Image 1 (cartoon, rainbow, N blue to C red):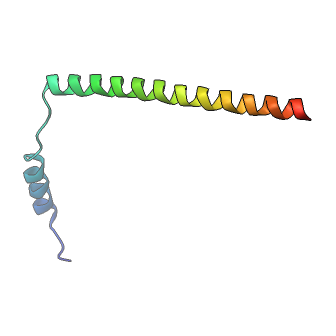
Image 2 (cartoon, one colour):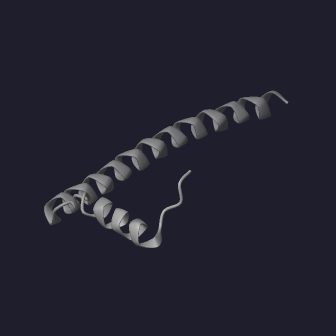
Length: 68
């Protein structure tokens, strides 16, 4: 691999940095809102699944304790 001089490296970094497209303020806010909505939905989903399986385990333990 060829060695790059420090000045050439800096020029390459500047060139690549000029290609960056930053999101607008509205895009940033909309993305943040979507993240909050999706994490809330997933949190509720996993809470429901955990509650459901917890009830099944408690029911099975109750059956096992009654038969012992």
